[in-house]
Image (tube, helix red, strand yellow):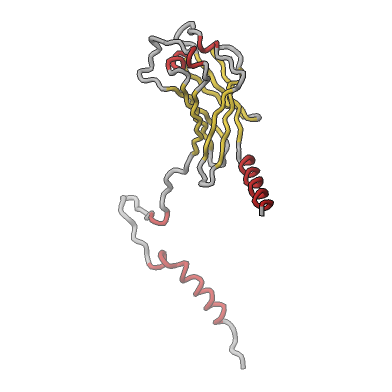
Length: 202
């Protein structure tokens, strides 16, 4: 009995792995070149919802972030990469420093599951960059990132069966008996026309 159970477990694991979708996360400060920051893994749950897990890159260098920016206009960029797909977003570097590297990455996907936009955000109560604290202590543990996949939904659609025609004056036009039931009457007329023309058998 152990062999079927092991086979079932391996099959379940294979399905779990095949359902995983990986996205590489790159980052850069200012005009510096992008370097590897981490990995986002998208997981499809049995309920149909989508889960996500973020992992920091082991060789992550946070020294450009822990040092104070030259001015408040310095930007911090992230880029989500998967094959030919590249999605990017930016915030002010001092906001990330003030948030102690606690951030959130939201990848928006369409109804077919294809990503089309990424949002990057940190908690900033007043949006200011004043009194920036050093993030050297927080940098020892890397980013504390929450990754989320957001799926678009269809908007409300009109109920065509409840729509009524209106006249130029704006009043509702009352449909005649034929306009309401022509699709019932027409087949009956056709059947009678076809059967009525046949000669009676002797």
